[in-house]
Image 1: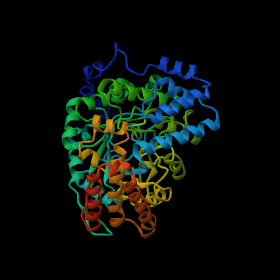
Image 2 (image 1 turned 90 degrees about the horizontal axis):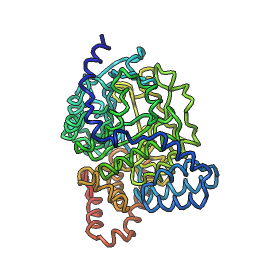
Image 3 (image 1 turned 60 degrees about the horizontal axis):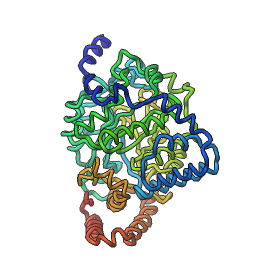
Image 4 (image 1 turned 90 degrees about the vertical axis):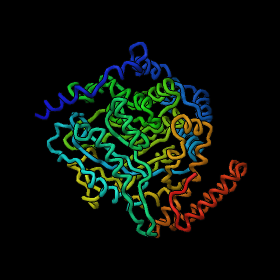
Length: 502
């Protein structure tokens, strides 16, 4: 019965002319022969060529396919150390030294797809199915707010009951919640909701834009056509490679100019997937003038009811994971880079030093898990296994010890610094200056409203250091009005005002 229901509903989902319009001479932008040829011909790259590539990336330019392929073929440990150092330098130039925090909120695990690696897949009889009511979403939001978060990513399975109208209502429900910060008693609310959801037609994407979402995420999972077919059955909506591949093109056309790409590493060769992500970024730049706002690179972890998630021959080692993160940082230097709680704490520490800009914390991926299962996660009923379940305060304290400032900034969305505007500012290393200001303001809020005594002990000297760096930067000395507003806003936050930004 469910199968007939899915077939009937699926017929109206995929709109072929909303794929064909983006094809080039009838072909998609993932030319596997071209990718494999570039990986082959760039083996044993000359050291001087690699250093030329690093210089190009440090000038904040997107790398060409041959340049990325050359980086992926480096074998010298000494040269990899140079690559790692350059990746962190690029990150600091573009985004300074802040780490943006968010939390995922899983609203539904109803799904009509049957992806071989996913605990949500329709054929997984072990999965306990549930879709949150709007009241339950508000309750989940309250729990997340009490941790100190200001950004949420709402996650949905693909199903008629969690259609775009439900998503839009969920977004509005999140925005409606106001809580009281536990330390200071000041009001708190979620300031930006991003969406991780199935591909949609342009008309539905416009509904999400009207609901006030930030970034729209659709991950291709794997860019390798045959592997994609093997893990996504052809009788499911997700089995259509091209409908998914051009999901973010449609989003850009619908006016959602902050889009996020990603691949699930472990389904196919990691070097090929890095090239696929680059080709995706390049095609978005070619057709819309701007690349992805963020890139994600989750590694496949064991999932309920999936043998592939544990037994794949393409699992990525920790050493190779660090390499792919560094190469992505250099290849698309303006993109934010997200390391997720799939990774264990020790690996997150390593890749944060390779150029990551965002991470989640206090992560619960069960449906209703923030309010229902606060202290224990049920891995038998979840989409995948997470590696870092630590609370937000613990992770903030750790990155603080590493010299990074936690940020909850959402200013860019509300100041119009999105899409082409923010990409231009990032490429000229300007947006990072605003990121630094807003990171200090939002970190000040966190220290006053949520932080434990141990975290304040780390955070107070760190924030003083950050303010000193701001005061000494030539950029702000040449723009005294910005510096004056920052000083004023910081003082207002100390006196109890909230949500001030530049």
